[in-house]
Image (cartoon, rainbow, N blue to C red):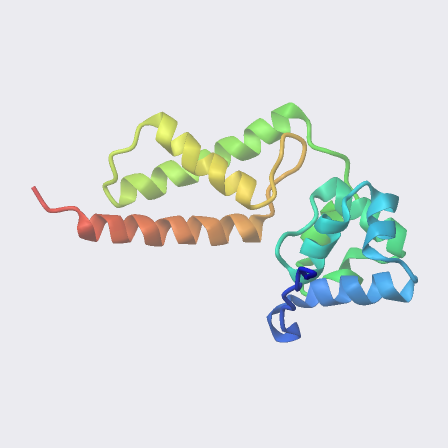
Length: 170
């Protein structure tokens, strides 16, 4: 008896537009997921994750991807804010620039936590800020995407508000 592994197909309606555009551009170039991955230093599974919208490429990988497919960022992601699209061509951030941007995010997180009366240590505020930074695409050399950071912060605000409702008043 032969065991077959069936791949689950995600309906196109649930795949982000940029992922569909990526798949179409790859196919238009006559590339398989494996060959595209080889060109840009990514695995076939990673390319498949991008094409289904499960993950998105990091900043440096995105640059290689756009070069390999001969696309601009706005062609791949037309709904991306122009300022974010322009940042893809910029040099990596210096350590002090990363520290400044992360510090600003930490201040925002601290204010938010204090505004709802959440007793947080500096370490826990730092963990919240770091989670937002990483979830929004920030690394040690790349800034976090401001829109993604705002979305993460909104999710944390909602979570903290829910936690506050569950905490009995003293």
